[in-house]
Image (cartoon, rainbow, N blue to C red):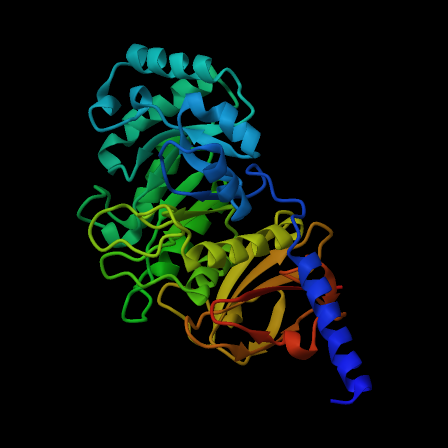
Length: 403
């Protein structure tokens, strides 16, 4: 190899490694108040484990005990307090107001405004029958601490109607918000199947949650998969990106992963941490997509969701490009586009490749004239859109706007 060519190649690789190192450095992370990123888990953790959770891009450690809050603060994390005395099961939903207030007040006093306490976990997947009881629990938290965030996670639409007790899934969600008045709308939907398909209803679930959240001016969080079990798919780069970017396109303010540690039962496998306490390839894939959220975050959290459409393939109960607010046309792949208004009135579009397995080239034109810019999901830089950036990996999204 000629010396000049060798020097050219060596210099090029050197610059690339320098660039990649800078892009992946530990830059400012989003706070949990700006955008929740957490594992759906409750277990005793040591400082090393907590630091690994933060290193993988989470800003919450999941559900934690009051006694662990000091350790969380040391690790640079927050958590959602869980305590058996304030778990609102079916029986607890029937307790008297006095008993509920007594239990809630006791836990709030133990927390005592700890800076590592983000909220309080109340209940997972309640039926509509106990919504009135959950409303009393939520009211008790507001009375004990007006800043408290009681957290309740709802069923997905594929659990309807056997376990929900409402006429429709939309009514189930609307009744929950109307009666309980939660500060956060959270639900789970596991949609990636081991035959490579997407479960029916995934986008319809996002549609309902987004619309109810916007109508009531509350943020929402989607709980998605980060492990394989039952007939769910093994985690992949494309699958994790798909779950994150489709959720972002619908305007979410949080993503939660089930689960971080693989439980030693059944066919659970390939969680970020396996049954022997070792990192799996999923840990690195999860960190990569979480860091993308943090890079996009300073721009994303200032956006207001105004529309979501699919093009050219439109799922049932979803919108087509004819409803677009900012985009004039788009093509190149099977796309999902979330449209937003920027903080200074910019026309913004988050374009997502819905293909779980294949990359696609894509293009977008806006109704508004101007230079199309992109927010680089690896550096956070605002750059002119074009060239090799006109490709999306499986499940990948790109945030574009008109300057």
